[in-house]
Image (tube, rainbow, N blue to C red; front, side, top):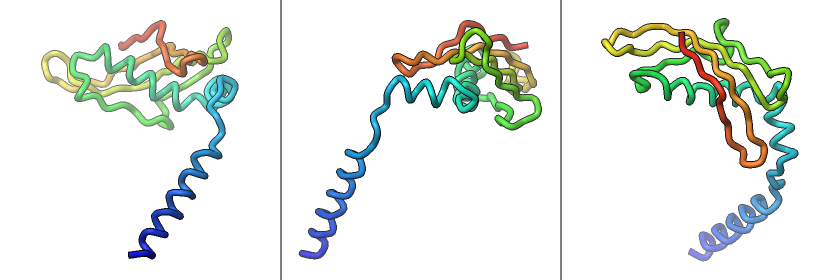
Length: 124
């Protein structure tokens, strides 16, 4: 019993020590990690949320993979935190038929609050 108590005490101290040593999340770190090529995957994931909001049956949506030939993520020229995301989504239409659609979403990352926004999302 005493051994188990020591184990809990030591593991709790190690956990507290590790959490206390974690570097703070700053706007500069968010900028470096998101407003570069590294942010492409996060942009792709967030673009899917904006596409889902425009589908008739979002629960049926299946997106192409990030490395799929039909998926393309590029940074915009005028905004280093902006991305244009192109991809495929298979989803049911209003009649229940599953169709493949192409989408294009312009997403941008807001450094101050760590959120993503979209100025335009098109499904064709």
